[in-house]
Image 1 (cartoon, rainbow, N blue to C red):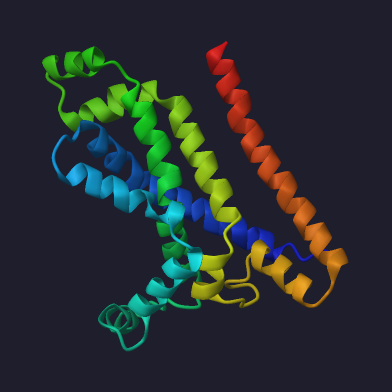
Image 2 (cartoon, rainbow, N blue to C red):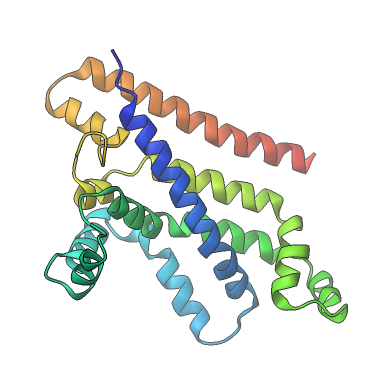
Length: 219
């Protein structure tokens, strides 16, 4: 019998991460498109680092930052927040690890909007934020969908960061990717195969949504 709890937890983690990254990623991508100062390449580098850093490196520094004897760890614990080996820690790690999958598609989409359209919005008296919400985002639905789906799919497939930050606590931090790893360790290949097939099906479905939508937009 399949225990669906790890999949439910994975979907909960991915959904939460997408919502948080939409809040962060939209204004950040807009800033990167509009900015021409020296901070831009620094921010772009920071955003892209999770693409090249081993998950274990990111996981280690999250553990180091949230350790009970660290300043951040003490502050969070004082207000009742447990950042390590908790769902909160998984969310924080996922937000960092999936950041480029949200920001980069949005930045690319915003960059394709003609400057004349944006300038016309400014001439009409709209502020930068009004232009973003009323002009740029409605014209970037394809990039927005791509960013959401890729972030969701990437978060569901996370392993290294979630294992280091959250461990494997059933019903709390044991997501689907961790469950598969544990079944393999136990040499229960039948269960690992079933869970893996479900993960493949989920990944295929979410990517199919993106490519199908993009094809309709092109034609």
